Every structure is written in C-alpha cells, then in structure tokens.
Length: 284
Ligand code: NAP
Image (cartoon, rainbow, N blue to C red; front, side, top):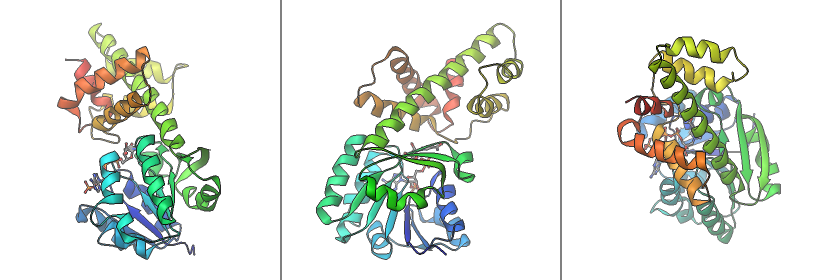
C-alpha cells in the first residue's frame, strides 16, 4: 500500500487512464473534475472525490494536474476555489498538462511564496501509452522534489526524467509536439498525393509500415486513416494550441511555421477530431 495521498485534477482523455494507474498502484487517490460526470469511472475504481481544487489540496499531499491549457491552469491555481486559495504549505503540485513555460514559472513562483513546490512534468505519448503506463515524462523544477515524486510518476510512464529548471519540461514537450505536427502533416500529404495518383491509402500504408520509415505512430495513425476513424486520441485543436505555444517560445522554422498555418486553417472544420483529421483539410 502506498501511503502518499494523491489528488488528481482533470479527468479528460488523458487524465482518466493516467489517474487510474495510480489507483491500480495502491495510492489513495482523490479526484476533482470541473464536469462532475467524468468522475464516475474513478469513483467506481475506489477513488474519492473533492468538490474544489482548494479542498482537494487540503485532503492530499501531492496534487497532479492534467487539463487543457494555460487558461485552465490559471483558474485551477488562482480561481475562487483554487489551489492557492487554500493557503496551505508543504504540498507538491505537479502540472502534467502541455502548457507554456511562462505559466509554469508564474505558478511556481506563487507556490514558492506559500511554501509549496511546483513541478512541470508534461508527457509524450497518447491514450494507448497512458492506458499501459508507457508515457515518457519530462520534468522541470527542483531536482530534489522531482526525486521525491519520481516513484509516483513512474507508475504512469516507462521513463520520468528531470530536464532542468521550471518550464524546461514544457519547452521540451513543445519541441516534441512540433515534430509530431510535422510528422502528421507529412503522413497526410503523402497519403493525399498517392490518392491523387490512384493509389489507395491502405496500399501506401502497407508499403510505409514495412519500409525503413515505419514507426508506431505511423501504424496507429495510418490505421485511423484507413478506417476513417478520427475520434480524438489527441485533438487537432490541442496540437494547434501547442504550435501556438511553440511559436511564443521561438518557433520560426520553415516546417514548423508551415505546420502551424496548416493546423490553424484546419481547426475551424476539424478541431474536435484527432490531429490526423488534418488529412481531411488537405484533401479538400
Ligand atoms: P481533454 O480530453 O480535452 O480534457 C481536458 C481536461 O481539462 C478536462 O478534464 C477538462 O474538464 C479540463 N479543463 C479544461 N478547461 C478547464 C478549466 N478552465 N478549469 C478546470 N478544468 C478544465 O484533453 P486531454 O487530451 O486529456 O489533454 C490534457 C492535456 O494533456 C492537454 O494539455 C494536452 O495538450 C496534453 N496531452 C494530450 C495528449 C493526448 O494524446 N490526448 C497527449 C499528451 C499530452 P471538463 O471535463 O470539465 O471539460
């Protein structure tokens, strides 16, 4: 039985399978989600619930956050019932959302003022990796604090690495997602070009998946294209959010700029679908 009391905020596509790993590992877990109906599956597994982020912090030692963006993070920390309103001390707050290094630095400073610790610890990998505890976790912040909570992080991932100061995890994640977007657009463009020349997606993907270019991402997203299944593992609007954040920290490369433009153009029509739905925009 693990005795650290874990609080979990954000039960979306990623938050549910990630928090379930901690319940499975035997930690006492208390959850909070803005939309209460999403707490049901965790309750069934034995997690407690708490009505607000502030009350959650009171009841737990380590709080982990997995929500959409900077705006959500600001509300969770500084909102009326937010974490900082609880006015507590000695807690560790781990933000695993993909957000800007700037918001991490701002929230870390507020946590330090109250005598709490903040780590940014975003993840690479999607739902499948979350369900199998195979995420790659990159952290920024105090290395000693990271070492204290590393065993908790390792219940959700195959590796958890300290990268540097506050915000370094976020910056590494934005670099990874820049490549993810370029990779996705490249795959979509190849499938569209093949199709324009009479070659079915299935035929091209069979070639690609057996070539030196084969990789797990291509297999998963290739299958999604073949099966016309664009239900979101990682939404197109969220990769567009990340490219905008990458631009804010200096993204100005030819491929990165092009990907931002493409995904931003696709967002209005396909934002709530998986990022590989960019193929529908390119195929128009
Ligand atoms: P999601 O399914 O859209 O879930 C978003 C979560 O954030 C929900 O729990 C939502 O609450 C909560 N939220 C949003 N705005 C909020 C606010 N203002 N106050 C309180 N809660 C708020 O997103 P996801 O796919 O799980 O992604 C979560 C984070 O992980 C994002 O930063 C994303 O970029 C990153 N990420 C995603 C993947 C992936 O493959 N999906 C992979 C790696 C990293 P409600 O239920 O009330 O809406």
